[in-house]
Length: 213
Ligand code: ADP
Ligand code: MG
Image 1 (cartoon, rainbow, N blue to C red):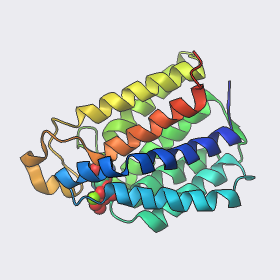
Image 2: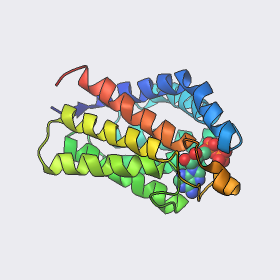
Image 3: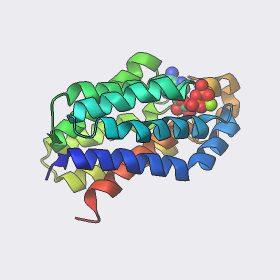
């Protein structure tokens, strides 16, 4: 089983829908430990992505991801705009020219995207950021790919790792971004960026497995 270009386009559209559905929730999380704009920021970005998507729907997957990245950088702002921009730009770099993706390609894309986020934001695991959801996900995909797991199994393992990583941010002290200004007072709150990152990976499993085992 492979991920086709249409699958990728559907994932991005479903991400936009899921972000819209979770906009208020993400705003609430960011109000607790930030400035309350995360939900509105990425919603604005993904709405812009939706309107750009038709212009690249017949291009290779790398071009599609890079266009998502550019669009997020130019419309989201805040800390998360350049970070999600870097994620998708790097995903686009390693999938350049491809019209479909194997599990190994998807694992490489998420790993490259994570590295883009780390290069830009300098966060490490445990800093209470989106890296805490993305890093375990990338690791799970990489291991699943090496073990020869099926794509649906790998996507499910990845989504579980993302959710766990997101929940693991609750007891952490924020070390990066606005939440870090709160120091110890950031403890007990789930990180908004880890929550939106988890959302994107939950949407991947929902979009691409169709309930298949
Ligand atoms: P801002 O903090 O500028 O208001 P957002 O509210 O849109 O931006 O995004 C906040 C999220 O960005 C945080 O919850 C965190 O996950 C993520 N973030 C902030 N700084 C960094 C960083 N240096 N590295 C990785 N992620 C970060
Ligand atoms: Mg914010």
